[in-house]
Length: 288
Ligand code: NAP
Image (spheres, rainbow, N blue to C red):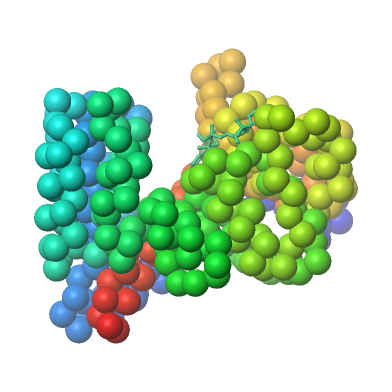
Protein backbone atom coordinates (compact mmCIF):
# COMPACT_ATOMS: atom_id res chain seq x y z
CA UNK A 1 0.00 0.00 0.00
CA UNK A 2 1.25 3.49 -0.74
CA UNK A 3 1.77 5.91 2.11
CA UNK A 4 0.51 9.04 0.37
CA UNK A 5 -3.11 10.09 0.10
CA UNK A 6 -3.30 9.03 -3.51
CA UNK A 7 -4.26 5.56 -4.71
CA UNK A 8 -1.91 3.33 -6.62
CA UNK A 9 -2.87 3.14 -10.26
CA UNK A 10 -3.41 -0.31 -11.76
CA UNK A 11 -1.95 0.18 -15.23
CA UNK A 12 -4.05 -1.79 -17.71
CA UNK A 13 -1.70 -1.06 -20.60
CA UNK A 14 1.32 -2.44 -18.77
CA UNK A 15 -0.53 -5.52 -17.52
CA UNK A 16 -2.01 -6.16 -20.97
CA UNK A 17 1.44 -5.94 -22.56
CA UNK A 18 2.81 -8.40 -20.00
CA UNK A 19 -0.02 -10.88 -20.59
CA UNK A 20 0.27 -10.53 -24.36
CA UNK A 21 3.94 -11.49 -24.19
CA UNK A 22 2.90 -14.71 -22.50
CA UNK A 23 0.14 -15.32 -25.08
CA UNK A 24 2.69 -14.83 -27.86
CA UNK A 25 5.06 -17.32 -26.26
CA UNK A 26 2.35 -19.96 -25.80
CA UNK A 27 0.97 -19.37 -29.31
CA UNK A 28 4.46 -19.90 -30.76
CA UNK A 29 4.85 -23.11 -28.75
CA UNK A 30 1.55 -24.40 -30.10
CA UNK A 31 2.42 -23.30 -33.65
CA UNK A 32 5.65 -25.29 -33.36
CA UNK A 33 3.43 -28.34 -32.80
CA UNK A 34 1.50 -27.54 -35.98
CA UNK A 35 -1.48 -25.62 -34.57
CA UNK A 36 -1.75 -21.85 -35.04
CA UNK A 37 -4.54 -20.48 -32.83
CA UNK A 38 -7.19 -18.85 -35.03
CA UNK A 39 -9.90 -16.30 -34.32
CA UNK A 40 -12.77 -15.45 -36.67
CA UNK A 41 -14.34 -12.04 -36.12
CA UNK A 42 -17.71 -11.51 -37.78
CA UNK A 43 -19.05 -8.01 -38.32
CA UNK A 44 -22.46 -7.33 -39.84
CA UNK A 45 -23.23 -3.75 -40.80
CA UNK A 46 -21.35 -0.49 -40.63
CA UNK A 47 -21.45 0.54 -36.96
CA UNK A 48 -18.38 2.86 -36.68
CA UNK A 49 -17.48 1.86 -33.11
CA UNK A 50 -17.76 -1.83 -34.02
CA UNK A 51 -15.43 -1.34 -36.97
CA UNK A 52 -12.76 0.03 -34.63
CA UNK A 53 -13.27 -2.78 -32.13
CA UNK A 54 -13.01 -5.56 -34.72
CA UNK A 55 -9.89 -4.07 -36.28
CA UNK A 56 -8.23 -3.95 -32.86
CA UNK A 57 -9.21 -7.52 -32.12
CA UNK A 58 -7.79 -8.80 -35.40
CA UNK A 59 -4.61 -6.75 -34.95
CA UNK A 60 -4.22 -8.06 -31.39
CA UNK A 61 -4.34 -11.60 -32.71
CA UNK A 62 -1.88 -11.01 -35.51
CA UNK A 63 0.55 -9.21 -33.16
CA UNK A 64 0.41 -12.23 -30.86
CA UNK A 65 1.36 -14.56 -33.72
CA UNK A 66 -2.14 -15.94 -34.08
CA UNK A 67 -4.26 -16.38 -37.18
CA UNK A 68 -7.25 -14.10 -37.55
CA UNK A 69 -9.90 -13.55 -40.18
CA UNK A 70 -12.32 -10.66 -40.31
CA UNK A 71 -15.57 -11.46 -42.08
CA UNK A 72 -17.53 -8.32 -42.94
CA UNK A 73 -21.06 -8.39 -44.22
CA UNK A 74 -23.59 -5.77 -45.28
CA UNK A 75 -26.47 -5.09 -42.90
CA UNK A 76 -28.75 -6.70 -45.47
CA UNK A 77 -27.38 -10.11 -44.46
CA UNK A 78 -30.22 -12.34 -43.28
CA UNK A 79 -30.26 -14.25 -40.02
CA UNK A 80 -30.18 -17.55 -41.92
CA UNK A 81 -27.14 -16.45 -43.89
CA UNK A 82 -25.33 -15.49 -40.70
CA UNK A 83 -26.28 -18.77 -39.02
CA UNK A 84 -24.89 -20.62 -42.04
CA UNK A 85 -21.59 -18.74 -41.68
CA UNK A 86 -21.42 -19.60 -37.98
CA UNK A 87 -22.03 -23.23 -38.83
CA UNK A 88 -19.18 -23.17 -41.36
CA UNK A 89 -16.83 -21.54 -38.82
CA UNK A 90 -17.83 -24.14 -36.22
CA UNK A 91 -16.56 -26.82 -38.67
CA UNK A 92 -13.41 -24.91 -39.69
CA UNK A 93 -10.36 -26.61 -38.14
CA UNK A 94 -8.19 -23.47 -38.54
CA UNK A 95 -10.58 -21.46 -36.37
CA UNK A 96 -10.54 -21.97 -32.61
CA UNK A 97 -12.51 -18.92 -31.54
CA UNK A 98 -15.55 -17.22 -33.07
CA UNK A 99 -16.59 -13.72 -32.16
CA UNK A 100 -19.71 -12.08 -33.51
CA UNK A 101 -19.44 -8.34 -32.93
CA UNK A 102 -22.49 -6.88 -31.19
CA UNK A 103 -24.78 -5.10 -31.72
CA UNK A 104 -26.23 -6.94 -34.70
CA UNK A 105 -28.78 -5.31 -37.01
CA UNK A 106 -32.27 -5.41 -35.48
CA UNK A 107 -33.63 -8.01 -37.91
CA UNK A 108 -31.12 -10.57 -36.56
CA UNK A 109 -31.77 -12.30 -33.23
CA UNK A 110 -28.43 -11.88 -31.45
CA UNK A 111 -29.24 -14.52 -28.82
CA UNK A 112 -29.96 -17.09 -31.53
CA UNK A 113 -26.67 -16.29 -33.27
CA UNK A 114 -24.63 -16.51 -30.06
CA UNK A 115 -26.25 -19.84 -29.19
CA UNK A 116 -25.27 -21.13 -32.65
CA UNK A 117 -21.56 -20.74 -31.84
CA UNK A 118 -19.96 -23.97 -30.69
CA UNK A 119 -19.33 -23.62 -26.91
CA UNK A 120 -15.78 -24.89 -27.58
CA UNK A 121 -15.20 -21.78 -29.74
CA UNK A 122 -17.16 -19.27 -27.64
CA UNK A 123 -14.17 -17.07 -26.78
CA UNK A 124 -16.39 -14.10 -25.92
CA UNK A 125 -17.97 -16.23 -23.19
CA UNK A 126 -21.50 -15.09 -24.08
CA UNK A 127 -22.99 -18.53 -24.88
CA UNK A 128 -25.41 -19.90 -22.29
CA UNK A 129 -23.09 -22.90 -21.90
CA UNK A 130 -20.27 -20.53 -20.91
CA UNK A 131 -22.52 -18.62 -18.53
CA UNK A 132 -23.66 -21.90 -16.97
CA UNK A 133 -20.10 -23.19 -16.69
CA UNK A 134 -19.07 -20.02 -14.84
CA UNK A 135 -22.03 -20.32 -12.54
CA UNK A 136 -21.28 -23.90 -11.50
CA UNK A 137 -17.49 -23.44 -11.56
CA UNK A 138 -16.75 -25.69 -14.53
CA UNK A 139 -14.43 -25.13 -17.46
CA UNK A 140 -15.79 -22.80 -20.12
CA UNK A 141 -14.81 -19.35 -21.33
CA UNK A 142 -15.08 -16.32 -19.06
CA UNK A 143 -16.37 -13.10 -20.62
CA UNK A 144 -13.34 -10.99 -21.45
CA UNK A 145 -14.09 -7.76 -19.55
CA UNK A 146 -14.76 -9.20 -16.09
CA UNK A 147 -11.98 -11.74 -16.68
CA UNK A 148 -9.65 -8.79 -17.29
CA UNK A 149 -10.82 -7.19 -14.04
CA UNK A 150 -9.94 -10.38 -12.17
CA UNK A 151 -6.47 -10.32 -13.72
CA UNK A 152 -6.07 -6.73 -12.50
CA UNK A 153 -6.88 -7.80 -8.95
CA UNK A 154 -4.50 -10.74 -9.30
CA UNK A 155 -1.77 -8.39 -10.54
CA UNK A 156 -1.74 -6.51 -7.23
CA UNK A 157 -1.76 -9.77 -5.27
CA UNK A 158 -5.18 -9.04 -3.84
CA UNK A 159 -6.71 -11.87 -1.80
CA UNK A 160 -10.49 -11.68 -2.14
CA UNK A 161 -11.28 -14.24 0.55
CA UNK A 162 -13.64 -12.73 3.07
CA UNK A 163 -13.59 -9.33 1.40
CA UNK A 164 -16.76 -7.46 0.55
CA UNK A 165 -17.03 -6.76 -3.18
CA UNK A 166 -19.70 -4.46 -4.56
CA UNK A 167 -20.44 -4.72 -8.27
CA UNK A 168 -22.43 -1.83 -9.73
CA UNK A 169 -24.25 -3.09 -12.82
CA UNK A 170 -25.85 -6.45 -13.59
CA UNK A 171 -25.49 -6.94 -17.34
CA UNK A 172 -24.93 -10.43 -18.69
CA UNK A 173 -21.57 -9.47 -20.17
CA UNK A 174 -20.04 -7.54 -17.27
CA UNK A 175 -21.89 -7.19 -13.95
CA UNK A 176 -23.30 -10.68 -13.45
CA UNK A 177 -20.22 -12.66 -14.56
CA UNK A 178 -18.04 -10.26 -12.55
CA UNK A 179 -20.05 -11.05 -9.42
CA UNK A 180 -19.73 -14.80 -10.03
CA UNK A 181 -15.96 -14.56 -10.53
CA UNK A 182 -15.54 -12.59 -7.30
CA UNK A 183 -17.74 -15.11 -5.49
CA UNK A 184 -15.63 -17.96 -6.85
CA UNK A 185 -12.63 -16.29 -5.19
CA UNK A 186 -14.50 -16.26 -1.85
CA UNK A 187 -15.50 -12.63 -1.73
CA UNK A 188 -18.85 -11.70 -0.24
CA UNK A 189 -20.58 -10.07 -3.17
CA UNK A 190 -23.29 -7.42 -3.43
CA UNK A 191 -24.75 -6.64 -6.85
CA UNK A 192 -26.21 -3.17 -7.33
CA UNK A 193 -28.33 -1.86 -10.20
CA UNK A 194 -30.64 0.95 -11.17
CA UNK A 195 -33.23 -0.03 -8.55
CA UNK A 196 -30.73 -0.25 -5.68
CA UNK A 197 -32.17 1.93 -2.92
CA UNK A 198 -29.03 3.31 -1.28
CA UNK A 199 -25.94 2.70 -3.40
CA UNK A 200 -23.66 4.79 -1.20
CA UNK A 201 -24.54 2.82 1.94
CA UNK A 202 -23.37 -0.34 0.16
CA UNK A 203 -20.27 1.01 -1.58
CA UNK A 204 -19.06 2.51 1.72
CA UNK A 205 -18.87 -1.04 3.10
CA UNK A 206 -16.91 -2.36 0.14
CA UNK A 207 -13.29 -3.50 0.07
CA UNK A 208 -13.56 -3.82 -3.71
CA UNK A 209 -15.86 -1.84 -5.99
CA UNK A 210 -16.39 -2.63 -9.66
CA UNK A 211 -18.33 0.05 -11.51
CA UNK A 212 -19.94 -1.19 -14.75
CA UNK A 213 -22.80 1.17 -15.43
CA UNK A 214 -22.07 3.47 -18.36
CA UNK A 215 -22.72 6.77 -16.56
CA UNK A 216 -20.19 9.34 -15.43
CA UNK A 217 -19.62 9.96 -11.72
CA UNK A 218 -21.67 7.02 -10.53
CA UNK A 219 -18.97 6.59 -7.90
CA UNK A 220 -17.63 9.64 -6.07
CA UNK A 221 -15.10 10.00 -3.25
CA UNK A 222 -17.74 10.22 -0.51
CA UNK A 223 -18.97 6.74 -1.52
CA UNK A 224 -15.63 4.96 -1.06
CA UNK A 225 -14.08 3.45 2.07
CA UNK A 226 -10.44 4.54 2.54
CA UNK A 227 -8.08 1.99 0.99
CA UNK A 228 -10.70 0.25 -1.16
CA UNK A 229 -9.82 -1.15 -4.58
CA UNK A 230 -11.81 0.56 -7.33
CA UNK A 231 -12.13 -0.96 -10.80
CA UNK A 232 -13.76 1.26 -13.41
CA UNK A 233 -15.29 -0.60 -16.36
CA UNK A 234 -17.36 2.31 -17.67
CA UNK A 235 -16.69 3.96 -21.01
CA UNK A 236 -18.25 7.38 -21.34
CA UNK A 237 -17.44 10.79 -22.82
CA UNK A 238 -16.97 13.86 -20.66
CA UNK A 239 -18.06 17.40 -21.58
CA UNK A 240 -14.87 17.86 -23.62
CA UNK A 241 -15.60 14.66 -25.51
CA UNK A 242 -12.76 12.78 -23.81
CA UNK A 243 -13.08 9.14 -22.81
CA UNK A 244 -13.89 8.70 -19.11
CA UNK A 245 -15.21 6.02 -16.83
CA UNK A 246 -18.03 5.71 -14.29
CA UNK A 247 -15.78 6.80 -11.44
CA UNK A 248 -14.86 10.37 -10.49
CA UNK A 249 -11.20 9.48 -10.89
CA UNK A 250 -9.64 12.63 -9.44
CA UNK A 251 -11.82 12.52 -6.34
CA UNK A 252 -11.82 8.78 -5.71
CA UNK A 253 -8.05 8.41 -6.13
CA UNK A 254 -7.64 10.53 -2.97
CA UNK A 255 -9.51 7.88 -0.95
CA UNK A 256 -8.98 4.51 -2.63
CA UNK A 257 -5.99 2.23 -2.15
CA UNK A 258 -5.92 1.17 -5.79
CA UNK A 259 -7.75 2.50 -8.81
CA UNK A 260 -7.92 1.75 -12.54
CA UNK A 261 -7.83 4.73 -14.92
CA UNK A 262 -9.96 5.31 -18.02
CA UNK A 263 -8.46 5.18 -20.58
CA UNK A 264 -5.62 2.75 -19.91
CA UNK A 265 -7.37 0.54 -17.39
CA UNK A 266 -9.92 -2.18 -18.09
CA UNK A 267 -10.15 -1.33 -21.82
CA UNK A 268 -6.78 -2.81 -22.91
CA UNK A 269 -7.44 -5.86 -20.74
CA UNK A 270 -10.62 -6.82 -22.60
CA UNK A 271 -8.96 -7.58 -25.94
CA UNK A 272 -6.07 -9.22 -24.13
CA UNK A 273 -8.42 -11.69 -22.47
CA UNK A 274 -9.97 -12.41 -25.87
CA UNK A 275 -6.49 -13.43 -27.04
CA UNK A 276 -6.04 -15.53 -23.91
CA UNK A 277 -9.38 -17.27 -24.51
CA UNK A 278 -8.56 -17.93 -28.18
CA UNK A 279 -5.20 -19.39 -27.26
CA UNK A 280 -6.86 -21.47 -24.54
CA UNK A 281 -9.44 -22.78 -27.05
CA UNK A 282 -6.64 -23.90 -29.36
CA UNK A 283 -4.66 -25.47 -26.50
CA UNK A 284 -7.74 -27.36 -25.33
CA UNK A 285 -8.46 -28.67 -28.80
CA UNK A 286 -4.84 -29.75 -29.19
CA UNK A 287 -4.93 -31.55 -25.84
CA UNK A 288 -8.25 -33.29 -26.64
P1 NAP B 1 -25.50 -2.18 -19.56
O1 NAP B 1 -25.90 -3.47 -20.17
O2 NAP B 1 -26.16 -0.93 -20.00
O3 NAP B 1 -25.69 -2.32 -17.97
C1 NAP B 1 -25.59 -1.22 -17.13
C2 NAP B 1 -25.96 -1.62 -15.72
O4 NAP B 1 -25.87 -0.48 -14.89
C3 NAP B 1 -27.39 -2.15 -15.60
O5 NAP B 1 -27.39 -3.32 -14.84
C4 NAP B 1 -28.12 -1.01 -14.89
O6 NAP B 1 -29.14 -1.44 -14.03
C5 NAP B 1 -27.02 -0.40 -14.07
N1 NAP B 1 -27.30 0.98 -13.71
C6 NAP B 1 -27.77 1.97 -14.50
N2 NAP B 1 -27.86 3.11 -13.82
C7 NAP B 1 -27.46 2.84 -12.56
C8 NAP B 1 -27.34 3.61 -11.38
N3 NAP B 1 -27.66 4.92 -11.37
N4 NAP B 1 -26.90 3.02 -10.26
C9 NAP B 1 -26.58 1.72 -10.26
N5 NAP B 1 -26.66 0.92 -11.35
C10 NAP B 1 -27.10 1.49 -12.50
O7 NAP B 1 -23.95 -1.92 -19.71
P2 NAP B 1 -22.70 -2.96 -19.80
O8 NAP B 1 -22.68 -3.59 -21.14
O9 NAP B 1 -22.65 -3.81 -18.59
O10 NAP B 1 -21.51 -1.91 -19.75
C11 NAP B 1 -21.34 -1.03 -18.66
C12 NAP B 1 -20.28 0.00 -18.99
O11 NAP B 1 -19.05 -0.68 -19.22
C13 NAP B 1 -20.53 0.80 -20.27
O12 NAP B 1 -20.00 2.09 -20.11
C14 NAP B 1 -19.75 0.06 -21.31
O13 NAP B 1 -19.36 0.90 -22.39
C15 NAP B 1 -18.56 -0.34 -20.49
N6 NAP B 1 -17.84 -1.51 -21.02
C16 NAP B 1 -16.51 -1.39 -21.13
C17 NAP B 1 -15.79 -2.45 -21.61
C18 NAP B 1 -14.31 -2.31 -21.72
O14 NAP B 1 -13.67 -3.09 -22.40
N7 NAP B 1 -13.69 -1.34 -21.03
C19 NAP B 1 -16.42 -3.64 -21.98
C20 NAP B 1 -17.78 -3.75 -21.81
C21 NAP B 1 -18.49 -2.67 -21.32
P3 NAP B 1 -30.48 -2.19 -14.54
O15 NAP B 1 -30.07 -3.60 -14.81
O16 NAP B 1 -31.40 -2.07 -13.39
O17 NAP B 1 -30.92 -1.46 -15.76
